[in-house]
Image 1 (tube, rainbow, N blue to C red):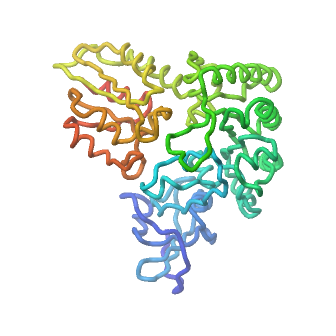
Image 2: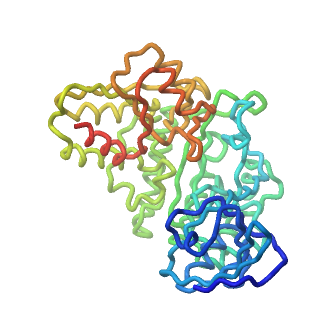
Image 3: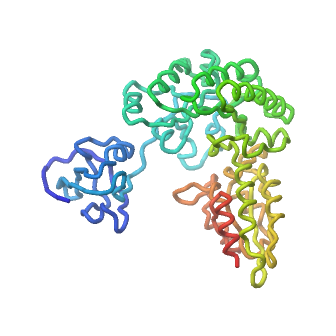
Length: 442
């Protein structure tokens, strides 16, 4: 590798906020607070550009040092190997829509600003699977998506009917969705899609038409999830919307099953997937693993419960028969997942271990919100205070944000142990995460 000071001007770059010890970046003298300007002569708009242009085995980077010097560094590395640097977070592009069912608009006032960001950024869709509506893509955005093959993208369709979609999004300028999907898929961009289903708005004939319209683009459109609308108790300035009843959920799933069978015959793939929440609301048995094919929308709550239960059943045979001494392990979960996790815990028989499972009601957002990932720390504290929690309390990681371990209501994770007086451990919200904890109990 070769290092040379080559310029005195200081163009804007990507701010480096961390350099991994022992990394290539540390070896060549890259430091925290430096700015990465170019890779192979290409200016960098964001971390996607950095990853796209830095995959080769030999790259040249231009770096602005903190003292104003500009370095040019030639680096040899493995193909697709990173340099070991992290950048400051990207600014999120805001959503131009005013959907009446938007979950962000149903948050209580007075909490951190990030809770009120309505994300409509194709970059976050590509990197993290965030759903976007395609209502703010410019021609330059599309050119970049095609050049860098930013695929798959995750698209909230809601309906393919042009006028209804404008009404649902409360955006008269929302472009028709099908021409955009046609263009994206023609350019080789794969899409996962979803419809947030609201009774009496985008169901019935509208839903059937949307399903058939989107299935025509398979395999460019890889899957379609049907997700029930989520309503909190904080809708003071929003119109009243019908809720998902058990009867409505069952009726909708029956229709979906018929469409799935047709699609399996036509394209040899089920394509259409109801979210787990629909089966739970409808008080129906969860489908088997085969139902979900290749689990295309697992992170969207589609097949997540079935996958967790199946994986846990495989892990059970690996658990120790007994441990030395005795230990009581407490766990928390939301109302939706409670009966399924309870069933699994009842199957785990380890001499010396007692499991206690606590269902946390969501007083923060309302009892209709039942997902574990939306549990508030304040609700945990209020509902577990003065309870005998045994030796350790397990908290699923999905209930906290990734960066500073805060619950949705900004309660710090560390407060639980201080207030409840029990060792509190954060576990990965997967079967593997729970199984690893149990395997190490002995």
